[in-house]
Image (cartoon, one colour):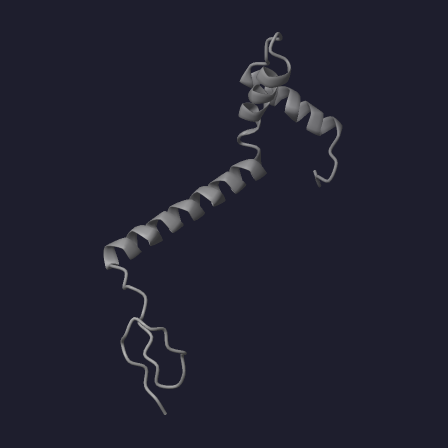
Length: 97
């Protein structure tokens, strides 16, 4: 059995060949990465819940109005929600009540 020696030549890897480990990451960097991952996950959950509950429906409506009907006056937020609730009452769809 031959052991690889440290030289500039590339030796084939075999039993007993030492392979250097990747550089260690500091604990501050790991904490920063974990914090960013938690923040990203929290933002994703917030986006999902607000989209599911319809909290951003008026903002979506305003963006649509500006993009497709720039010459018309959009509904006020109160008018928008009243119309949306009336539409849901007339057409319940998959709602139970």
